[in-house]
Image (tube, rainbow, N blue to C red; front, side, top):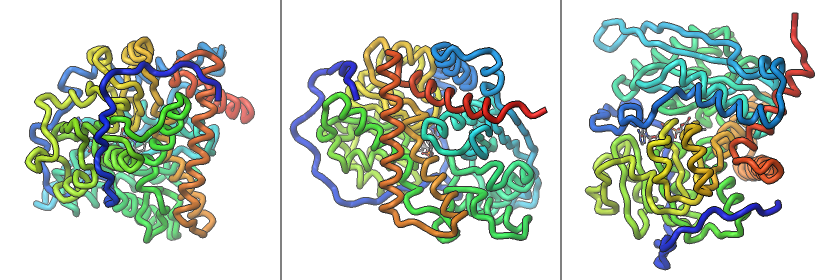
Length: 468
Ligand code: NAD
């Protein structure tokens, strides 16, 4: 890899008093449905005025920037830019009190030129069609950057799952999968977990589908529990991928991970595990946050203890009571901390023109999908901040989902060492191609990632041709 230029250095960040290394490796899994936690006082960037426009508009701008560089023709653009199939369903569910409530669900298949659609299903009160379209778009190009033979899809249900009992959640999940049965299939569309959807929910999806088809079909969904065909390494895969990409970025700038300071937004599957892995790599995690608040300790947060706390309490609510960290008055401040690496690992569009100028990190590792809008991108680039874009940085999840799909179809399961080493090879190779393109075109890393991905999807689309 050739060297471009180092991200700007900021002062007094790397305290010599590195935090005690903890060997405890407790890892959190996805959301805690059924724990009855209320989202009172939850910080919501949508209502904090940080989300001025749509995620899908933002995705379209990202496409246009790379397509311009690639000199894509109007016909090539027409074949791959817009989602191909959009379905909305109304889902009636019998609640525990005997009443029937309806929920709105979506599934969008953006592109299947390179393989079956692949992408998670999100349960969140703020899910919208705009968001699902954007997420499906990113999946198409994420699979292409990672060079796995899958297309892009995404789904969602407008629901706060923490308000449902386990039984209500199961009935809602099964209803969603059966309503959309024709879309799904190991060779059609393969969902996975996303925000607030757990391995257990993937298990219900797989069981619903297999019951309807009268066959054992684990490859219809990934992120399943190990007992029913899940893959070793899947729970940690996205965070592990973020770690590999971050290590590569740091090494490309001739720096070392040990001693670098970090702030992480989001403390779920991606954020919690990314904080743990970065901590285990010798980084000092100064800030963490979730929907209940943001917390800091300038000497380094004891991440294994924070993980145990989040596991026990269903999140970081009242984490300040442990005295391991103080609470920010404004949770958005976690993004503006004076750290080397910022990892936004919660939701999209949290860094916009409103706060991009206040970002002090030198590296941004996008664990979440779409955390920066295009205005923010321009500001971060101008400030010399090195952004590892989402479609590269969080591709570890879909790469191991692909390994799970392969194992399900082979009926032969790999040891975790094989999963992690193949994941590392795939992430390093993806990072290096994006980094080389970034140097070659002298463009931001995000544009470079889209240049590679759009080229791959476009070529596949042209080889297949237009049916009828
Ligand atoms: P998760 O449900 O496990 O965790 C989400 C976390 O974000 C929780 O800690 C939640 O409290 C926090 N959060 C929610 N709203 C917040 C807010 N307003 N401010 C701060 N924190 C908030 O979900 P996840 O799987 O970790 O997904 C997080 C992001 O990573 C999403 O953008 C998702 O699309 C993306 N992603 C996930 C995977 C995966 O494998 N799970 C893969 C690729 C990308």
